[in-house]
Image 1 (cartoon, each protein chain N blue to C red):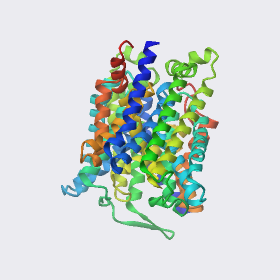
Image 2 (image 1 turned 60 degrees about the horizontal axis):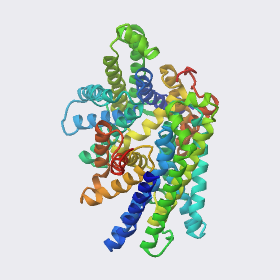
Image 3 (image 1 turned 90 degrees about the horizontal axis):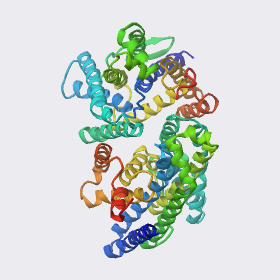
Image 4 (image 1 turned 60 degrees about the vertical axis):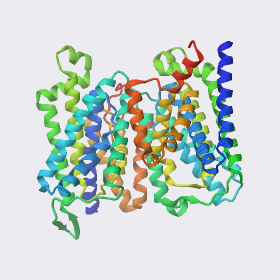
Length: 284
Length: 307
């Protein structure tokens, strides 16, 4: 029982970090970013390169990896996405091309075998007969912290207010003098940075492989659809829901069936409540 | 009428070139590669019929391909029926999958269909590995019976299938059905206001697309005489989309050309086989920025004269 509680929370935190960035960039810039999984993978690979071959100290490497991926996100928005913004399909395809190039690039540079990143915390905590690795607890803590910071940023700062304005009415916001393009870059950087944080934190206990970007992205899709496309509280709620139901299924039925949970959740949501748990009905 | 004649001449020329190609090469290896390129043609054309015309991008065409391929493998490898039963059975199961995903998602606007297809194909690929007792896991199901003993017969059968699928879908795309799909791409709300049941047309088109892709998947399994979870891979779905882009979206015949050219390209540029996806993604970037209408269809329009 207790282990379901803890492991479910860790899984939910990872899912939430992946899903908020995905839903944010969609809600604000209407970009359906298929390269979101690549941000996650790039974070993990950057942490691997900096700690492994470059021998940087771990905390420095972690922060540098996140900043690097955030910069990559902003650059991608500026160079690749912005010129194609007139066509939603072209934007979708260019993000897909970035995802492909990430996968192939990592494959060419590092090969297909799994890479290791050292754990940030090597201790394990024992509580009522259950061993929990410190790395997982750290992931949970950082995940909660990142989500709180994101909430404060959006609710309390001028840039956050501008982001909300754009997501509510892009044209109206631009008439008020809000620089939409600059904010799109900023949001892309934020979204990439949060996904990279998840990648860096989970790299020590999940595998770092060229194809690692796909499944997290599929999970992010599922969560975002269940929570409501464009809604940040919705995706956090859905992340908790999916994270816990997968953990419960893994413990009570079999780990093999966890993959089906998200698919069933997506189909049920689309049949029963297409706007998602907390989505706006007139979202599109 | 004259334009139609030019189209017919063009189609017959392509058909003749494809029919003579393996005879000129005289090698089983080349025939095999050509066969695969024809199967890719079936997949690209079927993708274009649903997604190119209606503008509803399908990021998991491999779901239908995999469904067809695994069904064919089960029919042949596990139930010991003649491999010919795999073709209709594969199409049927693919149609079933298309209904499961299409019914909830295609009623909605927004990107739900694209996301759900991608998710469904990825998860099916995982399930094939997880339930290895039944599906053979990573190795898949090997040792299937081929449809024909001669590679050349398989090639001509695939060529016939491709010609049939392309002709049928082209005819549908030029009928009022195609007009309605294009209208849905233009303005879905206006179509609804005009009294068109848009959901029916979208789902029915997906069903047709899935049936063709499933048959193609079964053909692929029979040609390879094996299936692996890779038939569900996102890389396969994406390869097909890039082929359609190169061909020219919404033209049906363009994607057929794009598929054949792109499937043969890595073989022509020797040593690039391993970097296939790399080459494809660079081509995709180039097309998105410099030639959004694709290459094959605009080229044919220019050859044929007035649009």
